[in-house]
Structures are given as C-alpha cells and as structure tokens.
Image 1 (cartoon, rainbow, N blue to C red):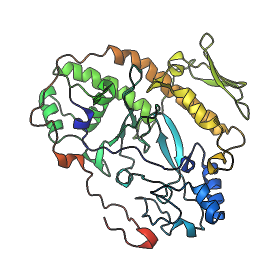
Image 2: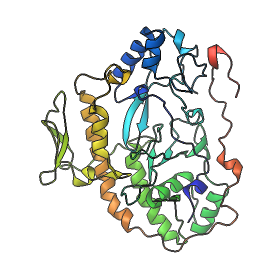
Image 3: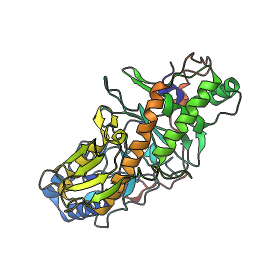
Amino acid sequence: MPMLDELMPWGTPPLRLGRPWVMAPDTASLKARWNALIRAEGVEQDALFGCTRARTPRSAVSQLPGQATGTVRFVREDGPCPAPVRVTHGAFDQQWLVPDHRLIDSARPELWRVADDHQVFVVEHGWVAEASGPAVGVCAVLPDGRSPAGRPGRIRPLYRRPGGVEPNLAPGLLSALTDRYGHQVDADEVVAWIAAAARSTAAGCVVPLPADPDVWRSGVELGRRMTGIQLRGARGGERPRLPGGRRPYVRAAVPARPDAITYDADDEVLSLGEGRISPVPAEAWDFHVGGVRVLELWFESRTTAAEPGTLEAIRPAFWPQEWTSELLELITVLALLGELHSQQQEFKVGAELELPGVLPPPGSARRPASVLDHHEEGPEGQFALL
C-alpha cells in the first residue's frame, strides 16, 4: 500500500520548543512569563529561560516568517511580549505560543511561510501497538506535531506555497486519480480520502488507494465530514454542532481549582471537581489517540502542577471561563468524530490501485518550495539571507 510519505512527500518533524513555558492554554500567562524573564538578569535569567545547546538568551536568531518579533539577542530585550498565536497542540488541543524564534529551539520556519487561511495541515499521530484512534489529524491552525503518546509524528502541509498554490502531492497523482475515477480530483478530495482511509503501522502511515471509483467516492464523502469537524469552521466551513438535545451544557459551574476529571457513563455526566457538564456522549469520553484519552490529557495539561519557581508555574490562579467554552467545543468535536468512527472501521478499500510512474515521488518533491512572500529579518536587524 502507498505510504502517506509518498502521497504527500514534503513533511517536517514536530516543532521542537526546547522549553515548555513558551506555550500555554491562555495568553495572560505567556505575557506574565515574558515580563518575568526580561526583568531577570544573569544567572537568574538563564535559569528561567531554560538554556539548551540551540538557544540561550545570547543566541543570534532570525525572525519567524510573518512575525514582527525582535531580533536583538534576548539578553538585551526590554519590549513587550509579542502577540501569542494559536497553535494546535497534540491531537485536538488548541493552545497559545509566543512566536519568537529566540525562545524556540526549532520552530520549522518553512511551515510558518506557508501557514495562511488557505492552508490545511495533515499530522501523523505516530504508531502505538494495539492503540485505537485515528492515524492522522487535520487542522487549519499551525500544529506543533506532538503525538499524545509522546512519539513524534510528522506535519504535512496540503500546499507548498501560500495562497493554496501547488499541492503537496506526488507529481502526477491528481492526473492519475482523475483518469482512474472519471472526474476531476483535487487536493481537498485527496485529503478527505486520507482522513478516512489512513492506517497506522509499525512501518509508518499507509493510505490504500482503491481501484473502484465507487469506493473512492464513499471514502471521500466520509473524509469530508471528518475534516469539516476537525477544521472547526476554518476555510469557510461551519463550526461543529451536535443536534438539539445532545449539546453539552454546564449544569454546575467548574470550581476555581478542579482537582480531577471523571465520567459517569449512565448519566452522561463529565465532572471536573464539583463542576458538571452534560450530556457528554460516551464517544467523546472514550476517544483515544495514540492510546491516550483525549479529554483526560486536555484536563491534565491545564491542572498538573509545575515546578515552583519556574516560568511554567506562572499560570491562572483560577479556572478561566474560556477554558470551559473550549472544553464544550472539544466535547462536540470528539463526539461527532466518535460517531463516524464506526463507519470508518467498517470502511473497506478492496482492490488497490497501482500508480507506476507516480510513486515513489522524486526527491525534489520532498523539499520545501522557495517562498519569499514574507519580509524576514535576520539577527540583530540584518537582512535575512534565504
């Protein structure tokens, strides 16, 4: 069977942050962490920063594409925190990141150059033996590529250039599929098929291609529903909603410091300490990626205590209202995807399509395109050489 690596040849490893404090579920914590860091000096600043071989406060680093951040060595920084940007963390969590390359070991600038309103990212979740859950995720928000189980996946943009130009697909693939299936196949259709048909194996993510046009059509229809849910209203779509009577609501307010998350399957109640949300379908609670329950991981990332004295320990003193709103949306996303999971499990590809002359793709397709759409400033205000 074809590998996803062959169908979408250009991919990058996950972002390597190097220090966890540059990402958070809220923006106020990031700004407070930044202020604490620039007030510190010398050894104290180094300790708070979390120095690595790739980054220290004295590293000379270029701007991230499209981000108006400083390029002086951070040890001399005295300005305000750059506006945090939304990123997809792991499988379904959405958090905030300080988009400053001086603070990130490797932010994959090639991804930032092509991240716009037209882009869609396909993220491999990584293989875990006997684990249930999807092999790939689809998102419109720049992903960090981290697998919930801690194993690295890969990030594959749908387009190689900004503006939805030049699909990141094996050269000749769209033409071959068009000839086989009898209609014009586009890049969005291929991504929908990947969402429905991709499977994780120890050798990597595989994507069988059917010889039967009817099988392709049914898989694309299922995949479009799956991707529409995951894109959460991006690219002109509608935000996911459960039907009336099945939408989750807050029945008892989430306390200031919820200490545990539990689920009552009989009453379909999700409890966060004394807080109560219902109805929460079992499909949402049981949704796993890489062997990890998504809702538990989301809760733990917001409540697990950080080491005192670190920047990561700067966080909200009380549970913010926006976290509850985000949780309701996440429950909706997982419930809707869970309903489609049984259809995905029953989906059979049958006879496979062979594409001689198309797969494997040429080595040039595995390299990023030359993108010069953004002004990029080099270290200390110099021109960046691309």
